[in-house]
Image 1 (cartoon, helix red, strand yellow):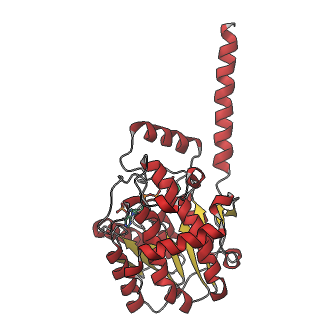
Image 2 (image 1 turned 135 degrees about the vertical axis):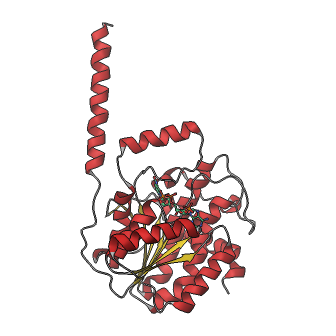
Image 3 (image 1 turned 90 degrees about the vertical axis):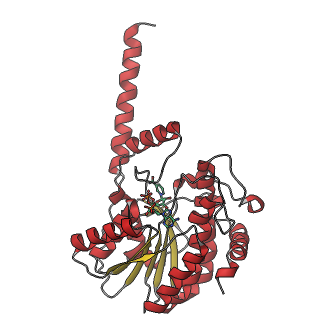
Length: 317
Ligand SMILES: NC(=O)c1ccc[n+]([C@@H]2O[C@H](COP(=O)([O-])OP(=O)(O)OC[C@H]3O[C@@H](n4cnc5c(N)ncnc54)[C@H](OP(=O)(O)O)[C@@H]3O)[C@@H](O)[C@H]2O)c1
């Protein structure tokens, strides 16, 4: 083959990649909703960094009382100061929440139930991808607890105040990585081959259990939906395998988005009028996205609910 043929091939490939990147960049949608949230109360978990920080900022800018539910007081207070300064909203507060401890989740919920008069929007954003295959003091695989069992318990405990404040909304931050996830109820708390499998399984759990939440809460005027924020270079990777880090960085370059862009779909689910009547759906770029059958199996959802309830039962009553 002549050398110029390979040259032409390389140039075409580079052009194709650049066009694809441009297309993916242009697919970022902004939430156009102008609704204000004066008098409303919002909780954003993991609000001190990345997508959660920008979500809390945008909701505070709309005038809501925003509770930053974070595990690290120092990082949370730094975020709180920036949000207050940037939005001029003094109704932004920090409450401690560590999802690796069921007791911390219970304490956080008790505090909210005792001190807040209402809760209009719960954003289950906190999550972690690079967690070791290790168990928490509650005997749960850490990644499953932070990403699935913890948010499940938190949501359960806050349902009474969400019900009282209806119409209200729950927004779960899931991920497209669910595509490679599996929910094996018998092995849900068993160590995985690697952290990515664990993360993908837990993010699939978010989608599956949401079906059961949606079914149970529909009559009560509480809607529950999930978002994939996009592939974004945040702290989510933690310290991962260098090869995976490189792969993730290439993906982020291909689908250029900021953490602020990532917050758009979450805010859209939290405030837009049209999403007030939608429940049990998966959103990307402020639109309903196709969900594979494994993410919306109602029988699996019911079984996962029962199992999850059993795991956290000591903290529910
Ligand atoms: N970035 C992406 O490409 C991407 C793609 C799809 C979905 N998501 C999802 O988006 C959400 C936000 O992630 P991000 O990308 O913004 O990452 P991030 O910057 O690492 O934010 C994660 C947040 O969760 C908090 N968190 C972690 N473990 C916690 C625990 N045990 N208890 C309480 N809070 C805890 C972190 O607190 P610390 O600062 O104290 O660690 C941080 O505030 C996650 O649910 C993630 O799965 C991200």
